[in-house]
Length: 496
Image (cartoon, rainbow, N blue to C red; front, side, top):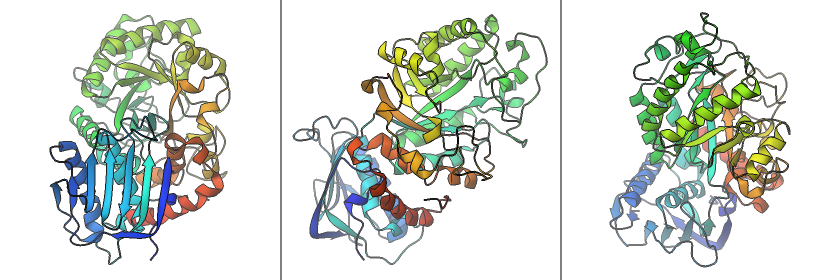
């Protein structure tokens, strides 16, 4: 069997240099050696062993050692010097010779991403959950790799369709496989409030009781959230929690109607229309409520960001919206976090360090976003007509929506983040994020069908050098991933 080539990696690496005629074989006596004294290298070594043991049946002991035979995971502060400066926290080098594999990085995250590349240059059968009788041959050569963008994410909507912590862990594993490093959790919306807040029992007692299309909904305890955050951190994925405001708040208003302006009783909502709900901008109870919620979420979240939504507040005038967002941003900063919001914040005086997430499917709001970026705001690109994975692949499909058009696999791959939005300086774009909204999702199978095979293309937009991205060259690399998904039990759309 011909081993997978380095050139077949997804996302494409910065540089791959094959060594023709050279191979190394993973065998029953292989050991994983990690840098002596490094708890992080040892942890990543154990993670690698756990990935490889089911399919191989090999013991793969992990030991701290300077031995470079077998598999060696080396933390080396000098990696990044020389001909590829600036590898940063996430760059790595990998060399495969006849005597073994050496992965080097200056930081643990880089070592982890090197492990993901090693996983892909092993035969696809390595993804099997049960033992496979295979020759575990790896092609010889070297890789030099680092990400293009610092922020590489997926936004996951657990408000419209509730996902359990165990299901979200599966998404985290998907992200790790393709070198993503952020999971943006959309925790609240009109259809459901999914995170417990101490002192506010009705948020989950009432506000979490349903979802799109009906059904029982659900919520996470704070311990559930901690478990997911820790699981993600072990895979170098930072959780970005979103509490959407001032719109998309019907579930909160059902629980605590005094947060509205009109004194009415609100009803649970199971539809998919947007823009009809809002917190009351002039009500001081609203800001006390947000201080409680954001304070608890910030305390639970080790990552730097709290996302405050800010989109589709259609019932508010621009002046009322701006007044609300000014106070909401101060609350986030009070609790020691960096503001992240949808790009509509551009029209409401973003605070220093704010990150705007551009989601529209056209140039709408481009001038405001460009002005904010030129004034110092950073931008994460998430254009709906390319990376909103809740869009249908093609017309007539039951899964997916079409308000931004249909999004083919090619369309999700073939776009350029740095020039997508006219007037935004290239150095203001700090990353790329895919999004999976829950309007038509009824199960994990539905979610995976919409995510795959489009997610790897987004990964490549976020990780790979601009000049490495070519649709014709990408297609066979993507096709080779499908055997891995079959073995891993991933449901995916059979779309080209």
